[in-house]
Length: 194
Length: 194
DNA sequence: ATCACTTGCTAACGAACGTTAGTATGCTTA
DNA sequence: TAAGCATACTAACGTTCGTTAGCAAGTGAT
Image 1 (tube, rainbow over the protein chains, first blue to last red):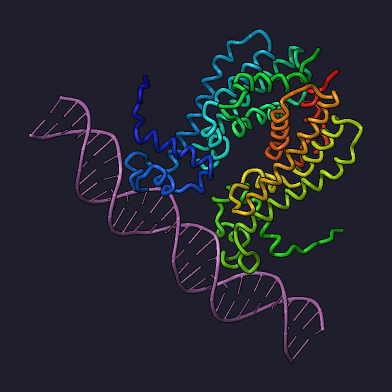
Image 2: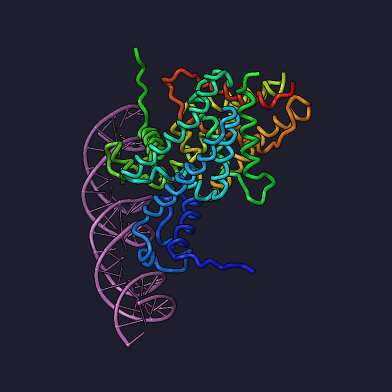
């Protein structure tokens, strides 16, 4: 027996918008496109939302929240920096794969945010990247990692992680957990001292 | 003494457009924006170009050409698959760093191409990715590389390479050659049998 | 001196854009 | 039964979009 949860129209709008923003990009998606996909008139959208950009804001900041929330369990890991990094990478991939459409919008369309949202967004991104850099720094300080260019390593690491939204398929044979493990294995193997 | 090469207006248009497309995205860049940056009227652009999309096509297919051209010297490398992969990665980074703006457009805006250009573009991308996969396959067949998921590895590899356009600065302390070397070192270390 | 080419303008086209105002209908709750 | 909320409509607003037509001035080559 299934429990049918009725989604509010507002939620339906945001979900459809996420798909369209991902497929065509924010700027190339019109409110009339969105309305048509929902079977209503464009003007009717405004009974539920304030503006087109509001939808983008919701998507971007909800994803940001999820990345930060997922970090909580990362902080619990204290055995080694390698273990901590693996946990961080797995957590990151889990968030992405839970909603690849929203992730694509998050990664590709944030620049269409207006101020002050843009600045807030970039601030959060800096914070998040800083957490990865800190693990690398701590690992190098303790001798666990080779000395490498911290920023270079962080960028390479995150680029591999963040690309997963482009190819992950829930029906594929790799679970999010396994993807995170493989990526950390791959990228940390060349990094570890032994 | 400097040699001043006068650039044709058409070329100036394409260069400015590249910058704007990179900054704001193709769809969010208007012909009036572009014209204003050049100090002329929007209508005047059409004395030099056929359409907005023509500019995008030029950028995308010129970049594609450069990636394929750079591959020629890769084919000369036959000592080992690891050496070949390193050469491929260096060549790839060199192309990206020679024009990071055009690269950004190439990577992010190709979906705004109309048919048949879109299909042609995707075909070329498949071809190019196939070349990386082949090096991996050959390396695994010869025992040089560990057996891994070929597609997964190729995607991870290319995502690290392709992200460089986002952070590379010509005035930085890393040369394109060194970036390619470091990336191949990092990603291939975990891959090699030893 | 003429021709061709490059470069640019003004004016305007039809289409699409995000959004607002005002109204109507039906459902749920008090 | 009344109130309030969710939902959707038609009509239209002012703006911006990519693009075209037609014209004009300057430059370099023949």
